[in-house]
Image (cartoon, rainbow over all chains, first blue to last red):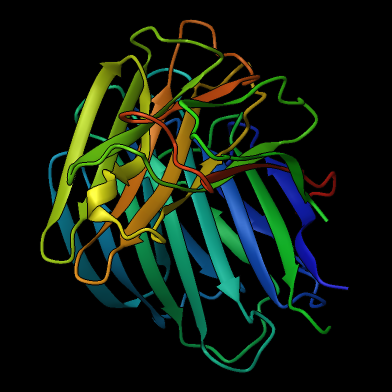
Length: 173
Length: 179
């Protein structure tokens, strides 16, 4: 029976950690998705979230980005990185009680091809400057993905930041 | 399965001026709105689609966006507005009879009383020679964050046309942490 967005794990940050890791990701789905509602303790309007897979910090990550800032549009590319860039998200001096919204989609995460991720994320603020990201990412490993780590950047994830991992199963399985 | 249909509206003959989802249950973690629509206004203009939460029409919304028309990309912002932008719609002259705007709107942690509501929207239309794509963020902020119980989407100009459809889904969470 096909399953769409089957909840696997949910974590809520404590306010004193700068990483959230999903370990032992079940290998019984086809794709996975993470939805995250996030804010940083960093004393700035923004912080910048990173991520890596399987605890791997070798320089086999690359990214192509499209970014909106509320006044400009930017596109860039980077390769030979030891992590994914996820997104800019609200820091401690952003509009109060305001959290970034992040969607991470990784298809065929158990397969033996390189892993391609698509990320869309927004960071809001009641000012002209706020951010929208569309990122395409590549992890040049043929290993199945069993863990994913999300890193807060300069600060910690605040204590109401939430991270939800979902499994998606294709038809016929 | 964790993505559950909550409510759906299909516009009939004669059109509808406003789409409203009310009494949204608080039993989910996130909401997703999917829509397929056009305005009945007969012109060649583009308009922002807007929405409000809980009938709040105070200056409690901000929106920012990435926009593109196949030739030019742009960025836009509005602050302290009386509604949020969730996408674009076009006058009927810009769309063929069978061409509609499509979009997806995500609202995470919609029941939280600790968080203002951040909205992530993608939206676009291709009209076989013209087209637009929008990626928008919006914020509903007020002095005391509230759970969303109502979503109101007015037609940008006149009415939503027949066959326009709006579907609201609830998404649940898992109690397991996987830490």
